[in-house]
Length: 356
Ligand code: KG4
Ligand code: ZN
Image 1 (tube, protein in one colour):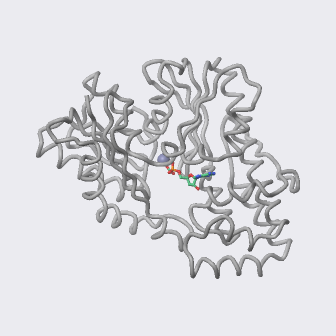
Image 2 (cartoon, helix red, strand yellow; image 1 turned 90 degrees about the vertical axis):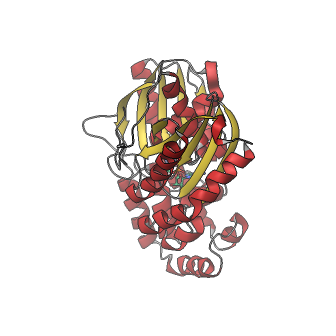
């Protein structure tokens, strides 16, 4: 059974064809980094317009690369949320039109469930339940208990910024480009993670919730206290001539003190994520830990999680499947296709998290 997946929830227009829920025949992702880079974050109106421009070519390319005809498809899956409503609408309307014209079943997929399936499709039978899923991206920092048959229970979430958002905001503050995660991750290896002591967030109420706004403010205070205006201005000047510089170019404009700051920030984020994930895993008696979403690309997080002394296996998706893509959406739709769980054309875009 082949499913065409379409994803347009944020700033990536993506399409993929996946066979039997795990075999990726094609996966095409068109990113809008150059459009949003100079604003330091995603501008929703621009994102919708770029999706409109890209969607036809991206879907066509995914079908061609998979050598797939419309008649070979069993269904079309599309992200219905959470995400930017204007962006979601582009992918959803496109998917509905294909289904209407080609008489194909339509399957709406939750974006977060997609991120979890990015791991599940590779891990296969090695994934034991109950599993703990830590979904960390630009829009989400959520902990779910995942039971066999892919049903979910929310255990904790961020009360303010998502982890990826914290990376993006700190990068912007320091004069680096969007998205900030990859840049700071690459620079962090050159710094001393113990140089600056940032406090861990203390949560009242649900101890499995996260908070990153205090850390972001602590970085701001540190920057204000250390006269960094000139170096930040130099980085912003580079961005005006080159929207996405490489790590070598950034290093030349980053003094050791700032590398130490970045490494310390990253260390604190990793500690926040793993401390709560380990507590949640213990609480539910997890038999595996799944980490997914854009921040799962983070080299520091990967080595800390894979090196942790914990009694259950840890699964990360391949880097290309960590950030937004449509293969994960097609994969998440496969169990729904088998169960006959289809959506109708009244399906609406959902900005917030609804797991059903
Ligand atoms: O999953 P994703 O592509 O989109 C959302 O659903 O948000 O995640 C994008 C987020 C951005 O905030 C980006 O800065 C972050 O993931 N990210 C990283 C890394 N690569 C991407 N954060 C930390 N380290 C990375 N290597
Ligand atoms: Zn995502």
